[in-house]
Image (cartoon, rainbow, N blue to C red; front, side, top):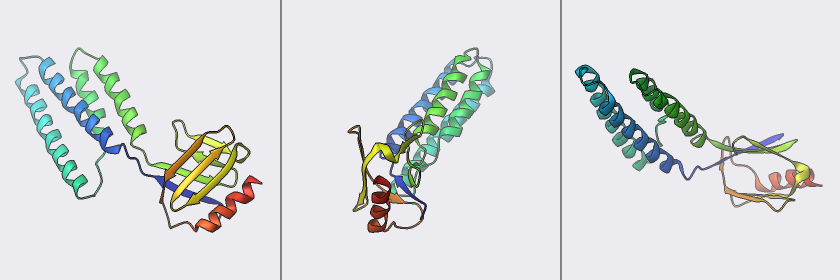
Length: 179
């Protein structure tokens, strides 16, 4: 096999989700309070948006409790950024687009790819670790340990993308690359 792929579970995903819902609710409250008072229909839209966001948060919480995963809030943050264009506070557009970008980065799938040429580590931006910089790389009991020559150690519980990796085969592959 020319490359092995592992998924690192994102243990902070729930924290990012709660934080994104907080940002969404604060945005809707700010839009409601800062919208011109003569536009009653505009305030009605913000109240409807608030109800939809609350419904979505409850739905997301119930899905999480049933271990079905979380919905992405990135698109909702982009939509809210567009609502800020109706106000005179254009900075809200840029702040929400920045927050949406950070949300997409922080909630992406974290994937380690071990290939013939290097090891791709899911930092931001993605880090390529060449084999000459690695002193040891081992998979034992679904824990991947990358020990670099500069004394940096990365250790993660891994999940598999396609199928379960044969540990002895993978460790033999890594040994041949480290020689």
